[in-house]
Length: 542
Ligand code: NA7
Image (cartoon, rainbow, N blue to C red; front, side, top):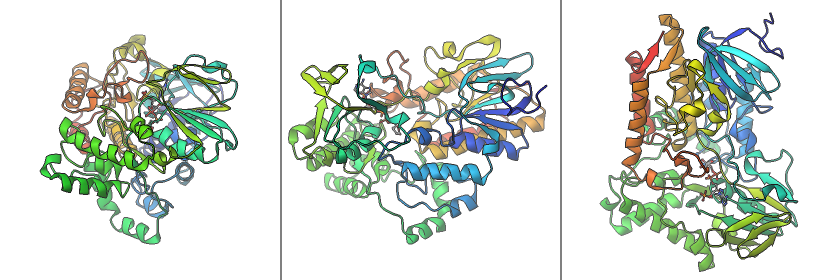
């Protein structure tokens, strides 16, 4: 028998924990498993660590959370020693941080790279997960942790003729490692979500002509990004513990918190002053949750919509173009507000045109470019910033089979069902990090990831102590949680954003189920902590 599970080919050797994905979740999960004395390995599709930050390396990419808040908090020395150079970190700096973490904790020796998991099957008789991955074959483990990310599978682009395009076609989530030169090129960008908002101004700087194809406009706030000074760093380090505490108990895992119960507690002038203060400092999240009723009361939300629309009109010279860029009947905050650097001003350039593809639909992609209802646009390069099959995409891309061979794809055919976004009935000893039914994408992902990893690690320790070898989400508890998640969402404006990817609406045929838990990161953490303290009611052990 091959005793080395890292050797290539099939092995019957049994690991304690197999982790899928070497992004923030997978790396930290591996670290915690080692601390528990568990034999753990990670399988990762990419050649290196970083997850979404490895694949998404388009120019202009930055995190929308401030650097000192978007980082691990589990190790004081790590968070005190790593020096961030900018307020909103760029992709190369974030990837450098991911590599630093992998080296610092010597994680790579337990990560198998270029191993994309295709299938995972629970062998009930042995209580073992058998996992198959490209290049390496099969691995077996007692526990399986899916650290596969919420935004890791690009959405299949549903535009006819895409394969016919004769120029350079690039998806932002699979950007080439070598810099792409747009100089002198006629470039098209499809998609104006947070990715489009970031990449468009950068491409416009060198392209001969840039055509932006917009279906749904976004709300965006100028980032006011800047280099961080030594003084910024000292100030952050002085109150890092307090910052971390606020994050963990907050609504969305950042320092943003409401200043009043209702938007109407302030008169028009005071409210405008408040919005100005947030807008003027790149505090998009603070604007998004400025009032407790912002994401609940339509009228309260309208005050922010009108404010942001007025700002777009100020920044865009041509009123007709500004009008296309202003979201219509779209709430502020039911999708993350974007942070931009010169996004709206880009449309003041002579080499940039904006096409509203709702009024002038894309008929198809041709060999030479894009055919709109109004005519053809010739392109050398086409960039797709068309988003992701969010939250369930990566899990359902694998053929996951639980007890009795039941397929996750079948179980979730009407939408995801999970207990706390952490475990699924019918799939024993399987954990999902930031799965559907947890705050996930409606939070600072770092805060949510750390909380999930720690909860799973504590649960594994509990099982060790009590001699349990099997855990499964109970069906009744799972159904109650699914009901609670949608009840909370239904009390807000979120599900009324009918086209949002939070609802799965961006992917044709995907069930329309509101996926994130939006009661707040702090509320959710407390709930999970209490479940653990009470001996995991709702979970079944054997
Ligand atoms: P998003 O937010 O899903 O944005 C994708 C954009 O692409 C959005 O404007 C879509 O319009 C547009 N899109 C998608 N398909 C098409 C077609 N077929 N035709 C025209 N336009 C299309 O993804 P991002 O990558 O920007 O951001 C995802 C998250 O990553 C973000 O929230 C950050 O947290 C990081 P639609 O809305 O579907 O009408």
